[in-house]
Length: 183
Image 1 (cartoon, rainbow, N blue to C red):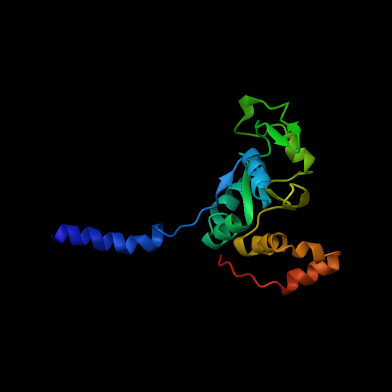
Image 2: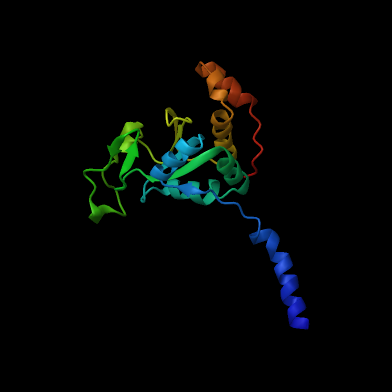
């Protein structure tokens, strides 16, 4: 009897730590594009590479934030895309690949995928935001903490970007923005 109660108490104590973890529901680019046609929603693309240290930090420190993950899942199709990988993507009826991909370099610098080129991605990580019809909205290069990324997530999810028509208006938005995601 004691062991059963002891295990039950341990389970009750651990549920808040492990039972409520929220993770981002990552999709491939093709999966997100198919889902978007069925149910329009913006797409957030994490353009990463296997060798990129800040990309790994983004996964470990930012994308693991439960508040951020919940917000992303509710408002975006989230795509994790290796910008130097060999995935074939059907983007707006155009097949995009990495014709110079070298499998021997899979874990180090490789050639850039055509999708990364299409979006003009030149640094990693870069988070690319797409509209509800897969139209390009913006690239956000560099590592961001959860509160820093929250500014951009809400900018696009809530269509606030449509009211920003200058660097000054973006600066005003950024200055007045109050993050709610805890680091």
